[in-house]
Amino acid sequence: MKIGKDLVAAAATPMVLGILAEGESYGYAILQRVGELSGGELEWSDGMLYPLLHRLERLGHVESSWGASPAGRPRKHYRLSQTGRAAFAEQRQQWAVVSRALQRVWSDRDGGTDFAGIPAFGGA
Image (cartoon, rainbow, N blue to C red; front, side, top):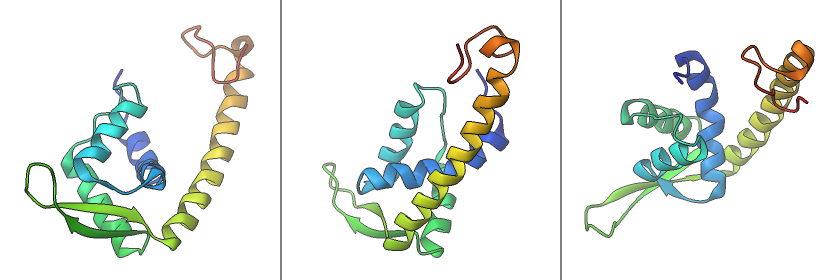
């Protein structure tokens, strides 16, 4: 399934903040984690991730430092700052509202199934 750019873009910040809430990470590992969490449905590129990380760093939500890798080449590690933790909590609350609204609209249609007859989130 192809997930639209708008939905991917909307979910990118909370996804990265959530991954970094699990602990410090670096770019490639974040990309791998996105794929893992989505069951392979989301495949982000470097060109999408790094501008987002840099923006989150400018906003003060993410801090970074250079560290060694097993291959010997330095890599930049990212971690949530205190303001990043607060931003993550806010994002979680916002997405919970959106998720509940979508669950309601989907379960109100077709007896709790989506348009293809597949049970919707929280549907029967």
